[in-house]
Length: 281
Image (tube, rainbow, N blue to C red; front, side, top):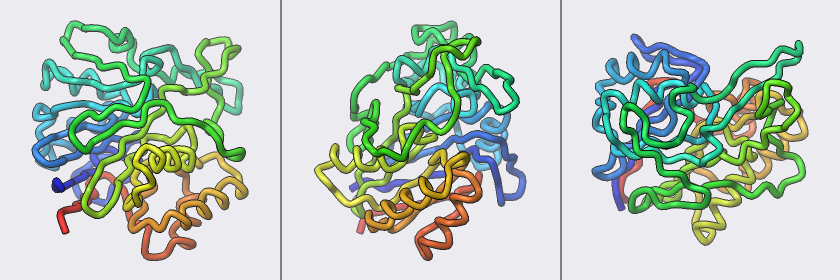
């Protein structure tokens, strides 16, 4: 099996000197001889942090978009300029109009930058691969595509719409995760898990014929979840027998605190600058 290295490039927090934090998420993944960028954050931190960490964005073989929200796609144009023509994998809906409605009634554009929304060849000659089903990007590196939503307690985690009037709900069909085959088990990379973290992990198990999941890394969008949903999520995580859990970004402090308390020895930091390496046995 190939060696896997994952570096948290952008996250809401950082404990590493010289890096900057922002509300967003991006991972730099080295899998065998492949280099993959999973999400791009808002765009303010990715170039700075990559340079500080000695990461050459221009070496990326592919860019994965977990979904079309600004805090995961904001750095896309910056990334595509130095890389030139490369493969970008995303669901078609990632390039659509997306808005969020806040508790005070205000409406915000939550989608991808307008110049990157078309999903076709752009002035920076990016090649977009639109996937509406599971796809193997590279040998052993997969994307789930749309995730079946079967649990009764998980939802998208917020008020999301496809129009400024907020009359059409955005069910976020573009939400997807990556899963990587390693000699230690499956490693799952989440963007925001708008389909539900447990729905996502259950689907990964189905796609891998119930291979054990070794690690789960990324956002779980429990930031607005109540105690019942958080409790059920943790219960299901315990049943998976994970070796490592790295909740990040939109997971929310209450959920993270409970995970660290109820899954002792399993939770690990995921701040910008964190490095995870999983090698051969």
